[in-house]
Structures are given as structure tokens and as C-alpha cells.
Length: 352
Image 1 (cartoon, one colour):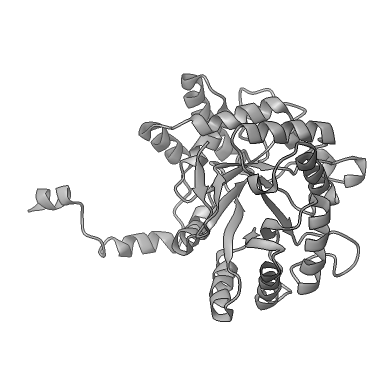
Image 2 (image 1 turned 30 degrees about the vertical axis):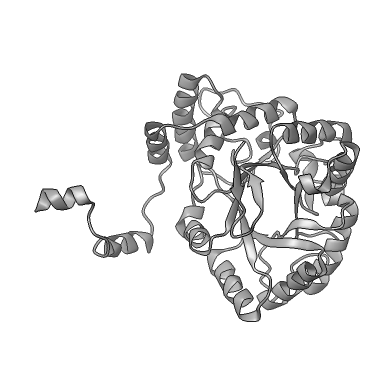
């Protein structure tokens, strides 16, 4: 397992992160029952296996099974005797947690209420990475930043981040935090997979420019890229995609990616899932890939992806089959930038 610096912070996280969206999910949890229904004993085993595999960061959220995921995670860490300093806990707020009009969003009131409840469920006195889970178009960014700044000054939160934000809003927040001398967002948690590379249009350039940590959710596109779906595959009725069709993906494009990944996986005698994760781990902007599992064998398979180093040829093949169509203004910027950068030394010599 490799460890990478989390954005500009002094904290290092494992390149694989254990996601806990599958924990809980009983019959009272609505759609979360379709995502996963991992009970406490099973969760203890998965978390112990992840830590033994070198993972040092666990990501959860208050909305996952309406608090059950956080609660199960906290109990597991206590029962396993994990030292608080040995684990990085990341959680999120912003989703709908009740019927009231203020039981959601990134307002000061909701943030202050939510952090206390998350701390209680996780049974800890601080959260290492506290993330705003959704883009709240109602609450001013300044209000959110001020609230998070207070939490860090109080020691309840050490670093803050966002999830599912557009580049423009995130860029505005970074500028405002500097102007207000407030705590800065250090991470972005975003959907990214070989079959859905939209993040590369605006968000990856922003991540690189501002030195943000990039945490990837749903690297297998909700199981669609596991190799269990598509032409020539028999769908696993137990798989999440069979009951919860999310995130949205262009199926024809995905099947082309799966076919290329399967060819590489077969040649290496590894799984398609491992190739999908290994491709993401090879992306320079990616800090940590969040893996969410329901069974020990799935976790074993995902952990093995960290040991795969794709060759230059394999990466080229995967990049080609997953390439996005040209989009504006990227194609115009690339065209205009060509005149700004000198040609490689070899090309200059050839033209002289």
C-alpha cells in the first residue's frame, strides 16, 4: 500500500480508502437497504481486514443509512481496539437527515448540529476530514466557510473538504477562504471512473492548480465495471447495480471499456475490477480511491489492485478506449496553448 499527501496538508493517506456506504442498510433505511446491509459483526471483520491491508482512512457520511454507518464504524473501531491516532476518519454532512426544512444543506445551523451528532455516533472527540456532501445553492459559501472555520478552531474538525461541487463554486470558495482568512477546503471527493471521465474537463485542472486532495468515489461505477455486467457477462443479482442503478453511465461506452479491461485482466490473470481501480491509481491527480464492499472476498480483490502497475502500453489502450469527445473550451485552449510551449528538443533539431 502506498501513502499519498492529502492535498497541501501534512497528513498522508493510503491510496485506497474504505468506504462505508454499505454498512447498516436495514429495512428502515429506504434506498440504503439496496446499497448494502452489512451488520456489525461483518463490519468489524471488513474494517479489520482493511486495516491489515494497509488502509488508514475510512470514509463515511451521516446520511449513509441515516446514521447507522457512522454508528457501526464507531463501534467497530472501539471493539477492534484501534488507536485513534492510527486511523483517519472522514465523514460528511449536507444530505437530507429529517423532515424539517433545516435538516439538510450547508447552513451554519445544520453543520453545527450535524458535527455533534457525527462525533457521538463515531464515539470520537474529533473528525479528521469533515466534508460538505452536497452543493447547497441556498446557503452563501461564506456562511459555510465561517462555520467550518469555527469547528477547526474548536478542535472538533482538523481538515475540511467538499463532495460533488462544480469547479466554479469550489474555486470561489477557495478564493473566499483566503480573503476571509478562514479554513480552506483541502479535498474534493468526486465520482470518477474509466467509463465516466467528466471530472477531467474542469475539476481535475482545478485540483492540480490548487493542490487539492482528490478522493474518488464509485471507481467501479456502482459495480457496472466489475466485469459482472455487459456483453458476455452474467449479471450478479446480488450486485448493487441490479437494484440501485446509479451512477448514470453511457452503457455502450462502458462496455467498450470493460472489453479492453477484460483483455488486459485476462492476460494478467487478475479481475476486471482490479484493472479499473489500477487505472485510477495511475491518474496523477488521484490521492485515494474509495472502495465500498459488502463481502470479504470483494475487499481482498480490491486491495490487490494496489499491487498492479499498468504498463505504458496498457495505459495507452485504456486511455484511448475511454477517451471523451473533444469539448469546448478545452479544444480551443489546447490549440492556442500549442503556440505558447516550445517543441521538444528532438523536434527542434529535426526542423533545424
